[in-house]
Image (cartoon, rainbow, N blue to C red; front, side, top):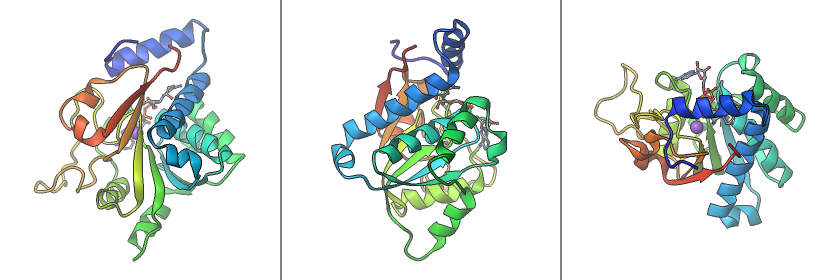
Length: 232
Ligand SMILES: NC(=O)C1=CN([C@@H]2O[C@H](COP(=O)(O)OP(=O)(O)OC[C@H]3O[C@@H](n4cnc5c(N)ncnc54)[C@H](O)[C@@H]3O)[C@@H](O)[C@H]2O)[C@@H](O)CC1
Ligand SMILES: [K+]
């Protein structure tokens, strides 16, 4: 596997593999989800031994699809899952929609606003794990406000004991390592405190690291970086 690929190179590698008929998009997504679960249990064996409760943030693209695969695999291992979808599930792209459909045979999906209400309560539930499958290499603009409030709360460890980011922490540009800043972002706060990006303890990426994991704000937001093969 190469050590670093840009987002354009990653998309080209995936498209070539899919076009050759060697693998399908949904199969790649299954491999990504399985790789993420493997990495998190390798990193935290205590979580493999004692299933707990996890919150999964699922975004509007294929990163969200990875989240639905992971939720299904964790449920099969005895975890309780609270799934929060960012956006409208009816607009998911095809591979992610398929992963969503398979999850819906196992459990419910809540809107992101439900989690916003939970974090406003005096004593929010502390999840064993927060899974950030919000945005991956397709992030194109600053994070929406409700998600920023959730990541700001998590920067105070208010929500979960551990955070795993799928492919890249949401809010971080995978090519540049920059945190995308909205015009109303507070200038005097660090990106994590302002919720402009997810601060992870573990980031699981696929095939190869992306430049943004290793540059700029990347190392500070990714935590431990694990690269998993998806057979490309
Ligand atoms: N079959 C596949 O396509 C596979 C995809 N993979 C996963 O898919 C990811 C890439 O998927 P996508 O290209 O769909 O990209 P993303 O899932 O990162 O998100 C793209 C979507 O989010 C929207 N968006 C971007 N920034 C936003 C913001 N700030 N607020 C609201 N909406 C925003 C875009 O308009 C687009 O609809 C990878 O990072 C990886 O996690 C892996 O599962 C491997 C297989
Ligand atoms: K992510």
